[in-house]
Image 1 (tube, rainbow, N blue to C red):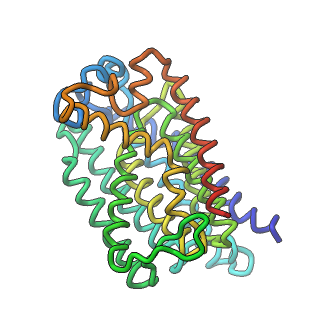
Image 2 (tube, rainbow, N blue to C red; image 1 turned 60 degrees about the horizontal axis):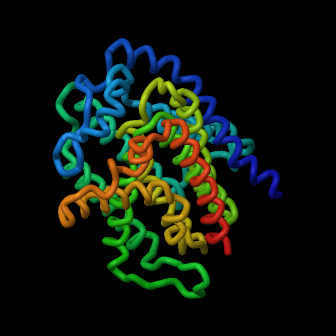
Length: 351
């Protein structure tokens, strides 16, 4: 029984990986033919000033590498979900278990993935056209609106208003405050999307995170969520195949916005609904994302309050580059930390 259930995870993951590998040769020529990268090198810091140190490190890589790598991820996931659903319609007895689009488990996370990915796609499109993308405040507002709709669905339709904690038998009841808490978690995780800053970094980290939640959902017997998480991990591994240095393309907003939104939804789905602790272990499983956000907050605090930088550059992965670590050393050490954190988080979630 366990072996057959594991196949329900492995099949979507493998299909998404193969779809990602298969569609990349068609997408890549288009991106390079139309020069889908930033027309001007350099980024601005969070305080609105030029990110001088970061630009010195990455100026040569800003030009000539396309955005829109996230299309590989969500495209392969949607193709996998759609094909399995079609096969279920045509051959219901053979593919009933493998089709993972379901109202009670995956409608909301798939909608969040699609909504975030499409908004991120527009942001990337504006960026490569030299229009500086969608303003940060507008992106945060969109994330908040999508998260608000998801939170309302949890609260009103699914009857969820609490979160669980390790070593605590009864969940913490939040009542209507569950909704703003959900939105804040979504905004915080989205802020961690700036980890997409070194070749191979974001792909490996996100693949590990979604692999961990696939495991958590599997042991909660939420097989559709497990299959979706595994498919996302498979799509990310396909993206990573082409993002290992030198990167063929970047994940960019069309990747990070959708991924961080669906991650938030899956974390809540694997909490009280699944009899687990999906939300409280999120800071552990997504530790690299948390470290990224916290380093930005600390840097802003240092500049505004202490009038000095705490790090050479924020986020943290760029700080390590600035002090002399080779990019591949930063990436591989982040991967190691991410895997260890995911194992610890899964273990706590399943206590």
